[in-house]
Amino acid sequence: MPIGLLALLSLAIGMFVLQAPDEKSIPASMRATSLSDLAFTNAQGEAISLAEFRGRVTLLNVWATWCAPCREEMPALDRLQQAVGSDQIKVVALSIDRTGNEAVQPFFDEINVKSLGIYLDPSMNVMEAAGVVGLPTTLLISREGIEVYRWVGPVEWDLPRTANAIRLYLENGSTSQFQSPTVN
Image 1: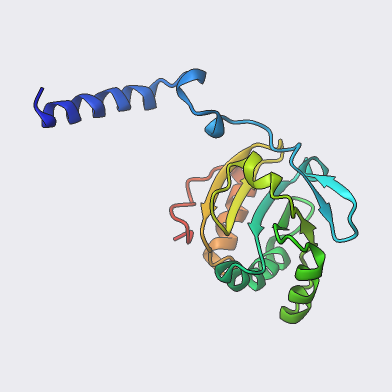
Image 2: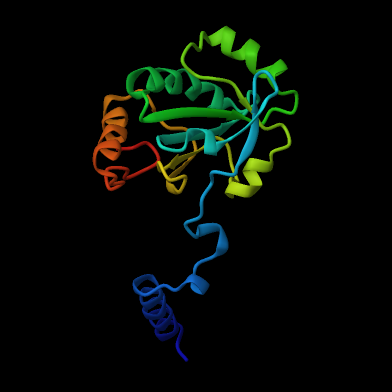
């Protein structure tokens, strides 16, 4: 069979799968599942899970102090929490630093983070459970605990268009305004 015809056939099959997926055709990592059970700790070492934030939208940012792009975007995440944070949305900056709060608290103090809480997962269990493969990765999680959008890589969180896109999601539940990793 000529390569061009094989490519066309593959495309047609792919389009059918995209139009009429069933549970078996979607990889387990991409199925809409609740992330509410993702567990980690707070700065005091107390166990916590995403279920604690159920009822409001959660912006889960998985990061580490040794990750340069993560360090760069953290002040903007803090400003985003200030700009849109409310009883409707919570920015959860989840550090995977092996030394936990020993690494995170000095960094937060250094960059003057005031609005973000410290959340820790030195075991990196959340990365595996949520299918995070690179840092930073941010998941937009619905009020019901379901991932609705994912950004891989740094985002300009404190741009007005980013805050507005998140506000739009809060108002109407649509993710169509999230066009690219930088929310253009």
